[in-house]
Amino acid sequence: MTVTVAPEEALGGRAFPPGFVFGAATAAYQIEGSVDADGRGPSIWDTFSHTPGRTVRGDTGDVATDHYRRYREDVALMADLGLSAYRFSVAWPRVLPTGAGRVEQRGLDFYRRLVDELLAAGVEPWLTLYHWDLPQGLQDRGGWADRDTAERFADYAAVVVEALGDRVQHWSTLNEPMCSALLGHRSGQHAPGLQDPVAASRAVHHLLLGHGLAAGRLRAAGVGSLGITLNFTPTHPATDAPADREAARLLDGQQNRVFLDAVVRGAYPEDVVADLAAAGAPLPVRGGDLEVIAAPLDWLGVNYYFEQTVRAGTRPPEKGETSFIGGEGVVELDPEGPTTTMGWGISPGAFTRLLQWLGERAPDLPLVVTENGSAWPDEVDGEGHVHDPERVDFLVRHLAAVVDAIDAGVDVRGYFAWSLMDNFEWARGYAQRFGLVHVDYPTQRRTVKDSGHAYAAILRQHRGRG
Ligand code: IFM
Image 1 (spheres, rainbow, N blue to C red):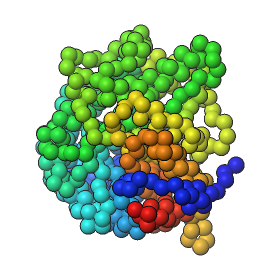
Image 2 (image 1 turned 180 degrees about the vertical axis):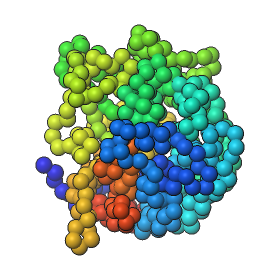
Image 3 (image 1 turned 45 degrees about the horizontal axis):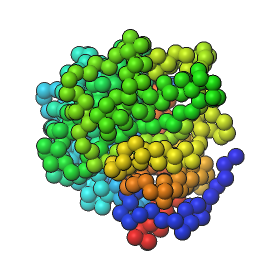
């Protein structure tokens, strides 16, 4: 059962540190729509979502929340909520329609207008270069399984920073490379929809190499606030039996440690290297790559949603294809207790522990929570309100979890709620609503949910203290 807590009660007298950044996040393909506007080229998500059977109800990002045309209204909403920052992504195929070569000025102009609108509204832009929408032209040449895509990503980064580097201070290279690599190439739940362990392993390394190469270009352009956003899923064995512990180790390696260790330590975890090699899908590392990947960062973006428990065994058909290389004998258990409409459990305590673990594993690297949120079956009532007590509860308890980590000495500098508004939840389509702001898709009317009001109240309280 969900216990609804008043925000001021849950956080009580406990405060976030001065200067703590409070924002909300989105991603280009999930909100922009206007997929043919101003010379944008197709991305792998256009192709994937238009392929029958790939997304729930055949939903696509063709219109999404029409943010490309309504961005001014959306920035005004952010200002009304009192957000100090907004995390968004640039669509690579708007800037380079085929992924490389010709630059589309009109695409860059859109982001310039968006950033100017944000700055005028007092909302700090946090830009992510890649949130999964690889230009289809590059996929046709092998996509992330091909080493050349890493170089093309660095070139794209250089184009964007040249255009926006005078206005945007905070830059992130990749969002959740784990999902791009493993959901995209191993389970096939995401674009490009492959089920190929070798391609998945190559994508892991080439995404990270692309990150490192792009980081070099961003630094050369003078970027002083640079990070990468990784998603973490704390993973536990169902029992102490060696086979279950081994199952948890394997998933934890590919889900959490392989990306983190490469970026912060310049080394892949030995057990993961061995797992991938044993599965016939070795990481295609060349001399010097790990030094590039471990380029110094100013912060680590942390996306957290849920924790998971696993056991060894035969995967029941309803679990679908594994997302992990060599993960055929690992079964993710259904969560105990209440779940969101995504079927995800709710564990704020695991969030605090994750932040503490990251603080130990990546000491000296400030953390920024770049995504955290929950999906619920929201509806606008007869009086035009959206009551979402479960999301208010989730938000407040997860903010309290961040305060707990800070109190325990972890250097957390910001929190971005996922998401500013309801949007295209990838293969799950529009049925999943993560927003602080409700979107009525037929009319595109935006309605701030109770959770949006609660977040605004917390932000006001924080500013009042600041
Ligand atoms: O919607 C996604 C987002 O694009 C990446 N992180 C997880 C969110 C919820 O599934």
